[in-house]
Length: 206
Image (cartoon, rainbow, N blue to C red):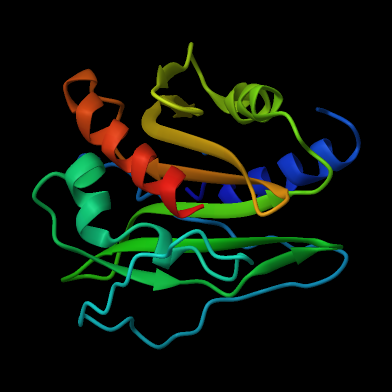
């Protein structure tokens, strides 16, 4: 089973641009799914990701160009993955017209199986952080739990499985930027502090 994270991201961009002002051992892995658009179809390379950490936190880049520099695997792990060791792998960007989304996959170190994703993109023409949050929350299966700043986390259900979905929005460098994080476990209220930490880091780096 593959959750349509990048498809959700592209749909968000299209909606905003049109004026509408994201496991147990036996559960399916949470992955991103490739999106075929009118402009570009992207595929992942077959080369395995490096296990060497070279993370340098992004400092609110003037132009978005990647997702992995916004959230390290260690930061992701503390909030979403418990004791599982993870590495990151940057996917090729997805483009739909002028909208480009960037995806970072968090992979289990031993098997390179996906544990979750971070998708980031800019929403053309959007100026309201409140409206962007409302749009981002439309895929929640229940009421979102808001975090300090313009962020929330919620439950995302697909078939009989539950997943954690966290979103952050920020008007930065003249554009609305959205970060959508997903994990392969159901939301855990006892991890609210870790979710808050992730949201804070993403807000600073968007």
